[in-house]
Amino acid sequence: MTRMAAEQRHRIRFTLNGEAVDRACEPRMLLTDFLRHEIGATGTHVGCEHGVCGACTVNVDGRPARACLTLTLQVEGSEVRTVESLADRQGRLGLLQSAFRRHHALQCGFCTPGILMSLDALFARRANADEAEIRDVLTGHLCRCTGYAPIVRAALEAAAELRGETNREAVDA
Image (cartoon, rainbow, N blue to C red; front, side, top):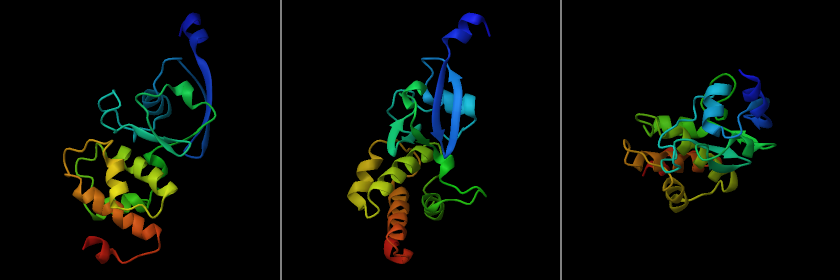
């Protein structure tokens, strides 16, 4: 790295999935590139690179954000969560991930991380989210495989489990 390139890098500090990040990055580096290439968090997918498809959605301070439109320096001091944060340290799937698996809501899986992060943010705000709210969140995501029906069923099941309703058959009806 040339001296000029080193001088152009800026220090960034934030929390990623509960771990402190303290690194240098170029001022115009997108969060998707930082997460994937600097950190190795490849669960954040790069799709359209225009903020349209939703595949790159991460949660910044509890709110969904398009990582392909976010400069890394914009998350200074923030709490950033990616799809990697949904499973536990032993790799066991989280509530939403398990529901997606049961309902075959992931098919090719390309859009899944972004959808999971948007739903995770919704359920953190409103554990009793209804189908209309779930469908509203999904309008920001393009999925070409599932037709959205299994995604909605999985999200409804996860919402029911968050409310303490464990009767999955009622959700499937």
